[in-house]
Length: 297
Image 1 (tube, rainbow, N blue to C red):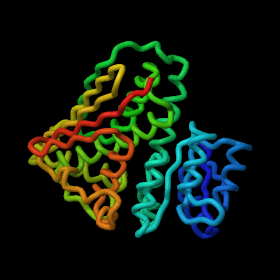
Image 2 (spheres, rainbow, N blue to C red; image 1 turned 90 degrees about the horizontal axis):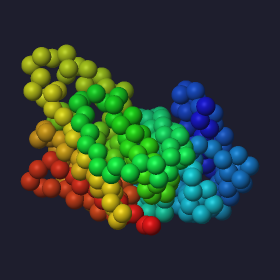
Image 3 (cartoon, rainbow, N blue to C red; image 1 turned 90 degrees about the vertical axis):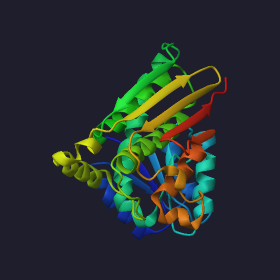
């Protein structure tokens, strides 16, 4: 069973996050600040760290930076408040796998934890195959079944680990970015659902998809697909994600790290993509998004 370390100087906030996670059957430990968290990590490394931003002695960014050196295999998610957009960007820049607003913990945190523990497990299971896979090009096609997204991205993590491409931390961060973009491509691209200020949980999105699948008049929409192309060379891993629908493109997201990005879910997504990937190309004339991650040998 996955173990989660929650780091926050607020007992109320720890209790709230712990309640959310325990409802998912997860084991939760806590620490009051970054220094306590590092001591806890030395005694018992968790599967995931969820940390607040503002804390005494060592804040969330400083903790994530320290983890990159000493606990690089443990992914971290930052929880931050409105007004800390620049610090959220900094946290992603130093190694966080994702961030969420405190207002959206109940909506997003269970999904994020489930995804990231899945990605970490897929990566760990493939480490013994390092260098065993030599094929470097793969094409995937997804329909509107949201349940297929995380298993597909977990498979991509396995492929990259088997090709001995990138560090574990970067594979998991990249997986989180890919998962977001594929979800966006289905819900907002193919299904043309308007982007909201409040993000949509996976459960709500599944309900929406089911309703549309049951409406025969919407078959032209529900049969749209998303394609994912992966090409790996000795220099880079390149992903091209394409959706068929005309829905709101991520291109129109607010500038990452600005206050407006907290009121438009695409802002968080674009900040995640641009922080994790080395290059992000959004084709203004099509539904193609190209993501490039350089490979250091």
